[in-house]
Length: 108
Image (cartoon, rainbow, N blue to C red; front, side, top):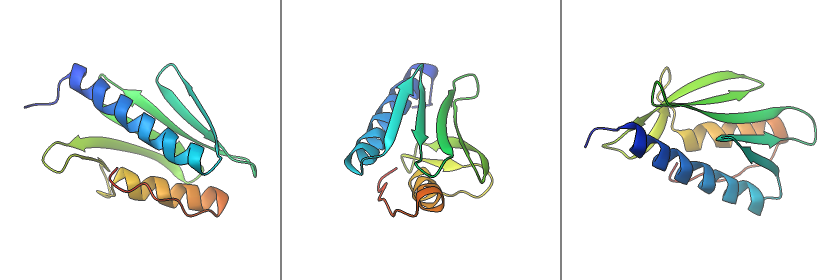
């Protein structure tokens, strides 16, 4: 089945919930408002996950840059367009860079 806007929103809702659960377990400051998930770090900086429904993409913004992700239906993962890095690997790397903590976003 081709990804449509309804399925896109369902996938992003599930994804953001899973990300929030991992971060809450690690006691990070997470805010979810208007479909945008924001992670604030004690040492400053943020990671922002925002929806881009017109493109059926997920955008991630961090100190190291901006990342555009698309959904691979066959693999059931979100990945960065340029590098093909999975969202789970991207988030683990970005959180580590900005906080020094190692978190596991397995399956994302």
